[in-house]
Image (tube, rainbow, N blue to C red):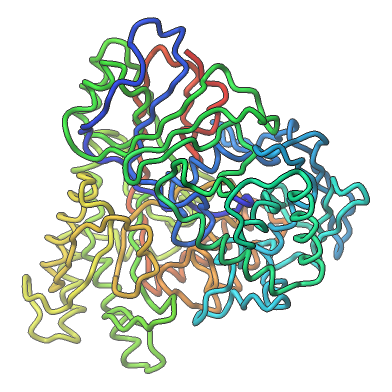
Length: 622
């Protein structure tokens, strides 16, 4: 249940080798014009129907939420924001230096999948999920408290909305519009506004109901939420918070699944899910919140890792879309298949490595990279973090694993912009990242070993002086496994002992303090100038390394205003300098895109922003 458009990056993995097994045909290859089912290969298993918590912020969860929900806007394949005028509209109604207001209106007649009318009340949960002030006043916890998770374990806290919203959103007399007031003009106002949530279903779940309510019950449940929202009623809101944070975290869906968990307003409803294997979506007969679909009645997401070649499954029309990062040989193999179209390009997803600095949950991080109030211990930890990043074989990873697929691939050297984007060259030139690019990998690894020897005099190649536990993804993801092997080998030369075993369900361990470092991909969901804030703010929803630098907080907060491109670049540069100085993260490479599609399936147009593949599912047709 995606309750609002959070400006964030989605943590993602990509399929490594093109190796697939256990696929059964879902439609006869012949008579493509009569087909109405699309089968998509996914590399991760569904873990939740709610992708808006730190532990469930995964591509597969977001893809399902996108197809089962609809809101005010979406991004297209040109990264342009498109208004969904079928669902509703929004407009600025006041714009003064200290009073900026936006009104969001749901069109009359829009329905939830259970037949309940959608209105402005369904927009109000976004405020609960995104306002720290509301959470504190309602006794739901302080999202800035690093020792205790708030009742709503939401990624919405700590963003532009949280920092600048004034008071409660106001509901119009006819309950179809909500007005949000900010303390000043917000440049990203179009994407920080409310999303829509089936609050009547959430209330009924909170009250222990196990079946869909009657019209009268649904109306009463929605009224109960509105009353609780206005009065900051902790009793009901706390029960709703537990459901929102925990009850949607399911992997299987069957006839025994509580139907209240499946209420949505998207084109599709979940009709079944087999844990760690597949999710099946069928048309929602009540759907009227977005663009009309084009004849696809069923979408099946198949979670596939290794096995026999996917090329045979594509040739047999047993699967219809494969998107991932196969090898160069696999891409050539795909292109040779009659009836298969391979779409290339470059994704906005980028691989990066994070080095943990502090604690991010109720336990303490005490590993080798932990920041400390003790000056000597803090200096040692920074040296070790620096050494780890110096020896991290970014160039080798790109040369051996990425360039065979995309010959133009380069090492990415900014966490805020990508090669070719405005300001990238200026940021790279001035950030100090040259520390991690100068010389050869051999000279950088030698420098890393010298830093380790400062604190471990007997350190040498293969001395295993500093133990590091690395989080990186599914054991079956062959590209990630190859990355992990290169990392372990090079870091060993600098005296590190990297424990690099893959982790099933890795996304749920990003905030686990037993890991010292992690590499995975950020997949931006918007073009917001504050889009990276949540990754590095001390209270950011995507801050999985316990990074806490007051200067970084103030720098990122200063992005929350109208700025020129030059001013944005300057602030990104200032933030990048801090990341380099503190040695907490480095980007690695931008993901090359490879999407293989059954040629009979039209209008598949991969986009640079998440959800990269399914953003225009309604246009698909045979």
